Image 1 (tube, one colour):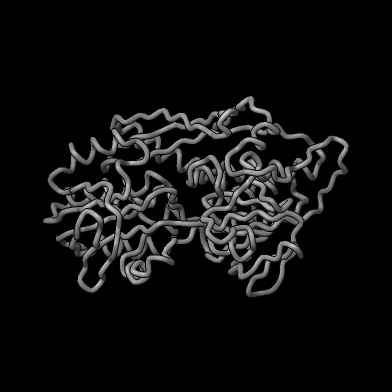
Image 2 (tube, helix red, strand yellow):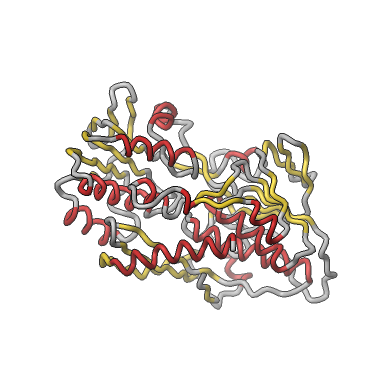
Length: 418
């Protein structure tokens, strides 16, 4: 992870940031008494939760760290489009959580969180209550479909594959059994998990159609005017490589999905399909609303943009569920996890921590062998109270970029589980 200091004072930034009040921040004073026996509970075993757990214990082995995750193994969403398109097996994307127990002493509980009581400082699971001194919430996303009931049935038969695990496996089954016909992929308006993911998926499925010489056509229905990132690179791929097998439809809002008739109805028109990948709008995980951190009508949890602390002291929300200046991605969650681990350990040890803005990097395949990428840094405009992303895009399709993409992902996994 590459990080640079923004040079912006924390006080000015927090006071002026849009949608962010002056939240309670960690007090890093040298005179604060040291504590090493606190208990940190982490909810969610994705990129953010795993990274936080590892770095808390790595830097402070005496700390009690509990990671609660319902799934029994970690699966990476980054590179999962490789799996869907037949470029990679599932196994390299998966890791056992017990590595964290054996190597670092993290206590991993495979259970579902059914409640969080912030006033009592406890997390409730099906097995009982777990108390905490610090709470890190990284539960990820839910699909925002309450006011669009047609999605409910569609997501059962044609899964989004934006939550790791069974959704990817079932969509992979549909694609593996596909012998020809029409495929529809839909893209929601932002924000959603991993901005380039649907565009990469469309390119790789179009490439799969060509590779397997299928009599098939892909209809890629985007609610947005253009790809949200690397638009030049993606559009070049769609029109130069896949014009015979794919149609890219922009500014088309999904109005209905008729599973029985296999039709997606949009503001642009109706599209029949044989198989589909229906990607709905997204929001923060529902456990955050039940905890009182997500008010009714809000989709994402407001946090201090530099510490990721909520309005409740010593309670942090990281990853896709938070409303921060960072994109919703595994890499961002990984970076946030490191920051929060450092902040918690610093507070316990009575040390000062220099706060800083993070930098992001994002890769995307556009065919079986070539990729494009974007590096993003951020600056803070004090007069407007907002964060401005500065993108450095490489939209030239390159095999070397695709190789760096693989190594980048492997580097993240080594950092989390190595």
